[in-house]
Image (cartoon, rainbow, N blue to C red; front, side):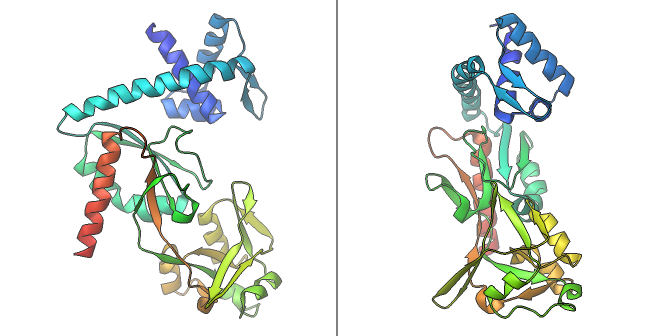
Length: 300
């Protein structure tokens, strides 16, 4: 296989995975026009159309699906073969691809970035921030970081944050014009900021003693990003629902008021998760060791 053919197939797999030329180009460090020309050249050389393109979407043709089924495992195996060479190096080397929720990116990964990259200067991190429950194996990520209850049961998991409550909260401005809810069902009479995850509106969970309540809230704003929810709550748009340690500074400063704390006993932690099948890449082993060492240091 010539170098050009290999580059074309890498580009093809990237577009097939991302379903978007721009994101695929960014992933490979190319400009979108180059990506489009590369795919066009591959289709012309093969004599078949691999993608159906519209102004809004990109999808594989039947020929593209068949090619992807053969090429994707081969490229994955090539990457694994090269990664195996790390076993012969004293220092882990290579790119570590992570899929992380937006809150985990800010509260778990960001504080660790400098120390990790200083400890492992030959490792490059490629981070995708995504609040949907992405398939890290299908997306060819090495690992992800999310709340434990949203991780598939067949994944290996390592806790990387202390447990924290999910709580309802609102700004003083909002509460100056609305009576604070005294029970979870009161939320249905309030303007709430709804969160969409994987196309589904997330119910708010509460528990008091043995009583558990899931509330389907309503309101003027629905978002798919937790940071936007917090900002909207700060602006007085309505009541939000977030992990307590993420908004702790706003609560301490009085910018947000926690609500229904006697119903907010459910605790969640963030976990690093990855497939335990096969050989783990050395950069991933390094990240696992880093988080374990950090946890041990914090506990000592």
